[in-house]
Image (cartoon, rainbow, N blue to C red):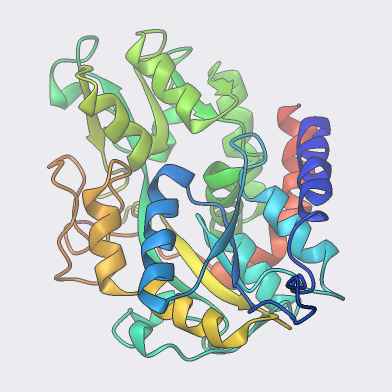
Length: 349
C-alpha cells in the first residue's frame, strides 16, 4: 500500500504542474483551451488514438497517463484531489469499477453520447455519466508444455482451491487493478461467508499470490506454475511471443457463473474546463471504430458490441461466443475501498 500511496502522491505533484488556467500569449491574451485527458489504458495503445482524435478536432489534446505501478489509482486520486478546481476534462479508464465509484461520488457529469447508442444497456450508466467499451476477460492461462491435453486443463475459478493443483497455480493479489475488481465482484456474488471459505481454501492449497497479472503470466510461461488467472491482454502477449500457452474462459459449464469481463470506461469530469471538446472526445473514444482499433492492437480488447471485429487471436472469444459473468457493477464500485482494505489485511502487502 505504501508504494501505491507514494505513486499517487507523485502523480498529484506532477499534475500540480499541468492543466489549470490557460496560459497567456505574449500579447497578453488567453491561449485557446486545450482539453486534458487522464488515461489509464496503456500509453502505447491510447496515445496514438488520442493524437488522432485531436487532429480530427483541430485541437491539441493534452494527456496524462498512469504509471504501471499506480495503474488507475493515481489518476483516480488526482480527480478526487482536484474536485474543487478540476483540471481534467475526460477520464479514460482501463477498467470500470473506479469510474463508477467516481460517478457515485458526483465527480462525473452526465453526457448522452450519440456514439454510445449501440453499446448494450448493461454497459452504459442509466444516468449517462459513463460508458463502457472494449473489454478484457479474466481468463486462465495454461502452460501447454506442462498440460498438453485440454482434458487436463482447469475450467473454473474454483480450481484454484482444488487440491489437484496444490502449489501449481497462481493469481495476482487482489489489491489493485482487475484482480481487485474481480475478487470484489466475486465476494458480492458469493456472500461473505462463502467467499471467506474460498479464500481459506486458496491459502490451504498453496496458491501463489503474485504482484500483478503480468507476473502470473510470466510464472506460467516459465513453468513455475501450470496455470494462472490473468487478463486476455497478458495471455495475448505471451501467445504472440511464441510461448506455449492456451487461454481458458472459465466457468462456462451449466450453472457456472461465467467469465468476468472488465471493460474500459469513459466519462466527463464534473466541472470540466473544456466541456465542448470533452464531449467530442468522448464521442470518439467510445465509438465502435475505437473498439475495432483496440481489438486489432496488441492489447487484443474484446468489443462489447456484437458485430464489431474482435481480436485475430482465436483463443480470445467474441462477446457472443461465451457466457459472461453477471456482476453487480454499482455494488462492486461502492465496495472497492472497503474490500481493498480487507484484502490488504488478508493477503498482505
